[in-house]
Image (tube, rainbow over all chains, first blue to last red; front, top):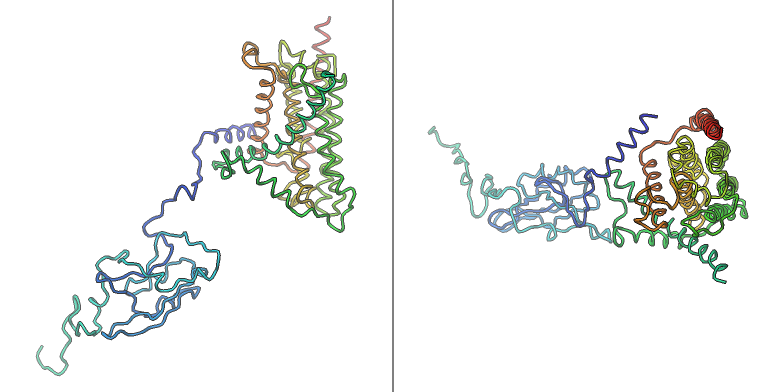
Length: 171
Length: 323
């Protein structure tokens, strides 16, 4: 009986306590910078697409929502011919971001992507690409990788040693 | 002519006010429960979300009015109306203010008890006619609960009747001129509140419904407007019990001693009823539902003896004062 009275009193005290509800459409919740929301494809500081179509994101995706096709540019760099994410399947796990060797695919603090038509949840490359570098402002894959392209020979990348001349006897 | 028309007009006002009040109460209760659970409750439609009432009404009105093929059709349709009619009839004897009462009969209290007892038939028949195991269990529970709680609900009021010497509710309010019965009849008040909750099967004692055990209890098979009638009846019952608690124990239309003249009587009555209703909602928010056998033993082993003690004490005091 006493505990009943006590619980009535405890509940009554809640008349003046702060409400937990976040009134969502008017009042946005705080989303951390590393919140895992809508996926974007970023560009390198020179404005080129970072994605090199390595397929690691598609391979690691647990729900198989990423589809892409590799193509090669005239200067020897790789890029995705198409890049498609089916957001009606995506579970925002962020494994694609972890797998990505070029920081191209990144998750953003945005989850407001409701559609009336399910087909509209399938984002193509032009929907995914942003004009920005995302979380890694200075990174440019082709400047640090040892891959040979039209504008850069072997050994010319950042922090990359000159290739060893295997025919030379000099140390 | 005007004198004859007055009760009719009053009855119309109470009818509309009762239905409207019950509708607003659904919203108010949800808001209150929300605040007590640290959330907002329905606040989207209209100012403070009061438009929710209209939205709910539209939804219930446009729902399919369906009778399950295995149900007893006539009784099934009759049951929800019975509770509304019975509860509405109960309002006929409630004195809202001096001269604002539809009919002041000299057995007003008995009439009220009779009408609330009739409301049991609605739940019982609804549960029986649904031809559904859950509904039947709900109806059974309701029957047992009513039978046991009816006993001391009536008896708990006999102390008041002894002190007033009348069954008329107007006389009972008038007898509280000096001191409200909530002070002289503490035990009676306690028992009546508990029995009142059980009678209107509100939350701590909503065993006939008990969502967690019986899906929806006696109204499992009901939908649309027939379900709405049950809800209307429940909220009317809540209001009726609140009105009766105010009338019988808290001085009806009279304000507290020295500030009586601050507000008109009808406003005092409304305020008090509002507080009692909020208290019932608070009980709903705070107290868990007892087990079925706990409910029964609470009724027969605690409430009934308290009522009898109250009766004996009241009689003893009255007699010794006479002597």
